[in-house]
Amino acid sequence: MKSKSIKKLLTTALIATMLVGSTLSVCAASGSEGSGGSKGKEEIATVDTQTEAEESEPAAPAVSFVSANGNVSVAGTAVRNTIAGAIKVNTLQGVAVTTPLAEVKASLGLTGSQTPYVIAFDTDAKKSNLAMNCVNAAAESLGGQVVTAINVTLGAKENGKLISLSNGSAGMVVGLPKNADTSKTYSIVCVQPGGVVTILNDQDSSPKTVTFAVKAGLGTYGIVAK
Image 1 (cartoon, rainbow, N blue to C red):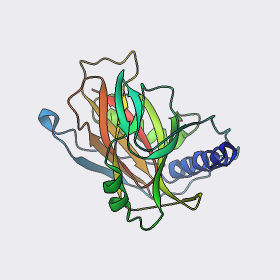
Image 2 (cartoon, rainbow, N blue to C red):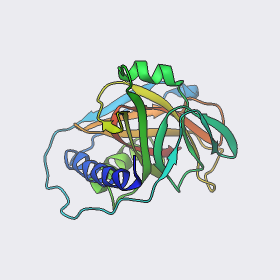
Image 3 (cartoon, rainbow, N blue to C red):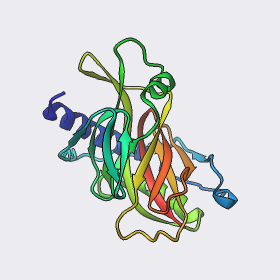
Image 4 (cartoon, one colour):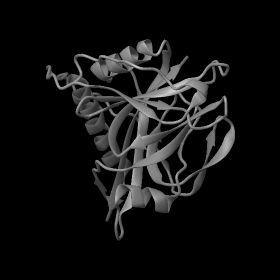
């Protein structure tokens, strides 16, 4: 797919993220991360309150394309990225999908020539104001602080066209920012369309990376240090 088409899709995704935020005018967070670095997730809140969406269209970022089963540097270590995609993340030291391709296809329910595709880029309060308000509120309830956030769209391609999906997931590993305090514990706050906020615990033991499941469709993922 040509870069122009990807940029158009990224612009659409940025607007969609704003609309995600517009359904989250209240973010009541409760609960905390499990002790001992336990794996899993805890749903925090579901809110469906409509507000006005932002009027201006954001500029799409320049993108870098990654291929399936190619190596990506994540926190200085070569990691096999299993699915193709368009990535523009400057705040983290690398992003890679690690779940085997066949497993991702099965999780997403893909058939025939359909192949998984991921889009990831940096976000912040200027791009996704209300969604980031929810991320920050959830982080505060955990007694943590957001170090950065990314928007991720997990979908598929068929005959050169992108397909939107709503079911399934894939494992993703990201390298923490260079200035991150590696003595702290990290978790992920995920904000999805429909007003669902979920806490995802780190699934790896490296102090330099965070591994978590990205869900099909669009989501905002805030990395929280505690």
